[in-house]
Length: 348
Image (cartoon, rainbow, N blue to C red; front, side):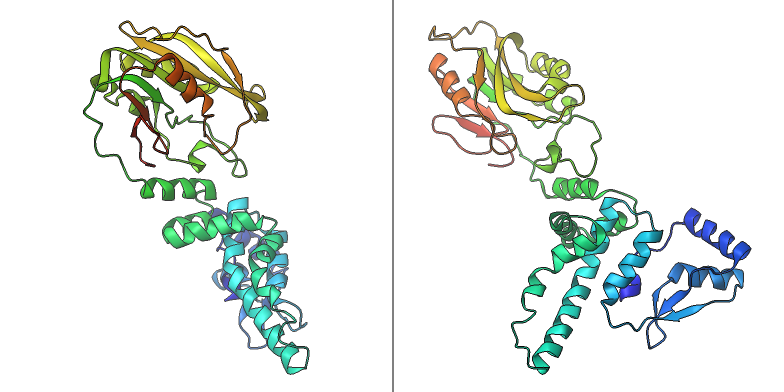
């Protein structure tokens, strides 16, 4: 139903519309199709009924795309967020496909050939996004939310939450929690926690929990790492500049003391609030006495271009294995298994 593309107005917005119609009459007509069905103007129709205002109707019959016509009319009047526009674009996708099917049938009947509009079916998502001024990818993300959490999708469409927030909620619900920590004791611990930064980013920027479920500093600190660490152990802990100060809560709660650090120069810059960030920090922390077994001093700055989100260069593990070849070792929050390393993480 093309009339249902756009969400009904919120209470405040609708009240303002009623007051305007009551004071000035209905200035914009209510659009209907040849069968008398409303295709645009549900809010105006409702306001006229509630205020007793005479209605004006206009019939759409120009033969062009009805969906495009309704979208164009509404986008001129409605102030929708990018998230709402992506949700609306998803709703018109099957309507565009139906229009394409009818054009195909008409072309085929007229001798134009069955392949004349076949490609249109595959383009409906991008076409829908283009009509609403969002990317096809963003429409696809809305589709994922709608499939996995219809209630959240309706909240997005109503403007109650953003698409990014909905995606995070979906992701959190899908996370399989790790049941228990390993019972062994480890001399070498390597950790890349999913830090929750607590900052709010615009919808069109990807943030850390677009890629994995994050944890607060308190949640990370409360992991019983002290119970699996040997009395003399070393911890290599990945942190970023925004979380640097808070990360020492984790270091201390896990029973370690800071000693030194490596800097990973990623070469490519990423957005930051105070500067253009191109590095991450690998803290070296010790419990008891645990200096390197091999006295080889690696450069504290390692330059290697970043690849996929959050993946750390393998050279850092090679450095750890080189200077600490002895003792049982574990990688916390690991994504893959590595030979001679135990692993702990919900992506394994």
